[in-house]
Image 1: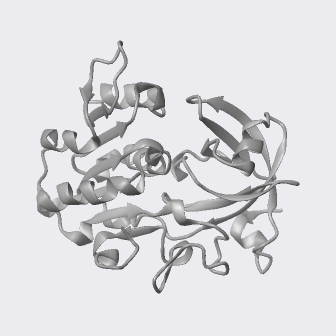
Image 2: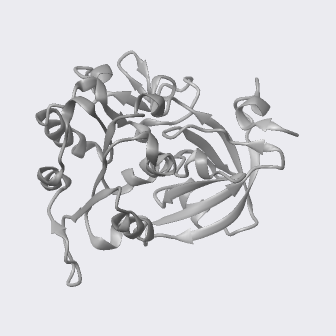
Length: 282
């Protein structure tokens, strides 16, 4: 067996391929990072921003954003999963060596070819760092192809910050500007306190040559967009992920529909220009 997973599924888009859990690493009290391995010869061949449908036998199926970058696949891929329902709860109880089902990758990811040569401003909130991590690491692995890289990351509490080891590594890099904030600090927190928009004053932006990328809870988008537009970044250079809306992944169930748009097929990544003014989008 060889080729990509989506090619192997072919006409059987509803039939999952088995994948083995190679490693499980706790990140927070609610999130774990799962490293999955497909059968020998198969690759996921995803783009940053795409998602897969993950199934646990006897429990069900759930859409999960891919958290690892294509540049670091090595025959595996990573999912950062929050324990939030039946499927994710069952997955959190699983261990290395056990098997899950995988369909995908699905959806439209970030048009990374359009980002090359530009400054990139990342603004993830909370769990939104999980899908953006795929794009961030892809950009860092191709660092010479991009201009200034700025990451503004916000979470509710220090205990909810994801990928703390990678945040520390990004902070130490001379070619990345990282600012982190929390809404509710603990006694050990020495960084910025406040919502993510309090970080935007620290970001130096050359608007005409900047691409901005954001992902996070729905309530965050409107305020982040105000900041980005206020800095003069064109609507077509602002990208959002609506990964929270996914369900079947192939445009059949209608769960992800925003007016006339099927998010699982036209998204989950959209430019602000594409969804500005679309009712129910924001």
